[in-house]
Image (tube, rainbow, N blue to C red):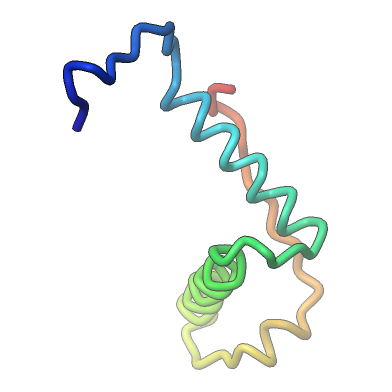
Length: 85
């Protein structure tokens, strides 16, 4: 909410897209550098590992433990083709 006295008249261009790109870049940097100061890093990593665990169990049609998953040397590549930057 803004009052009549608090008026923003600057150029916003792609404020939401640019903000999202900036946030994703900062998040990626935090993860790759092992910096968990951002409180969203740990739960996000846990969430992604849970998803990968579920995917692995579904593909193998059996129960898979997190310890078993972490021992694997499988490298999962994210296909960025088609994404706009």
